[in-house]
Image (cartoon, rainbow, N blue to C red):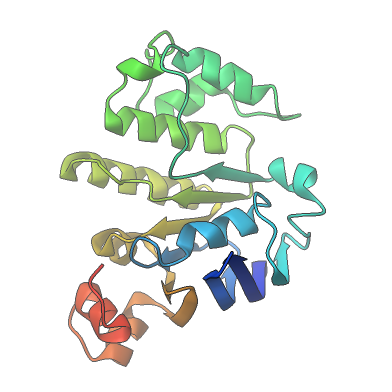
Length: 238
């Protein structure tokens, strides 16, 4: 499979704090690629550089062959993004949010079909503030997919959700990949990474320690579970 994302020797500092230190990885077309690490490991900074929201100090990034900083407007039409701290105004209705995001793209998806697919049919008039946590996450996915992206970047998608909502969301993500969308999944939740990801980059203190399939990480660490492997590889809990 060809690479749709290439990150080489990425560096980013904030004052005297190094957030990313020589980070490199590739994402292949059609896979779910996990960026796995504890809170503060540098995952979100990497993603923000990846989608053009932050400029790295050094390094090379190519997304669908383009530079996210120089070609940000072009990539916005082809890459859907759901960031960890994304929130909408409490009184904005679901249908209004969908129509707003549709207006950003030349050939958007049908909002009714997308909401139905994500279990939000009949919620078009519901204010954002009245949605449950799981419904807000489903809406975030819908907004990330409304532009028919080739790549979807999902950051800490299930943080704060109960186990049932997590499992439902995982099923949705698997369905999105089955529809041909490449997914970058940023998480610190081991069961999520093990359930969904084809390959995983383990990041700690701003560095990628290892990249491989879940089975390869287990073998390399000599551990029976991904949580145990993560502790063995990083010396930290998740």
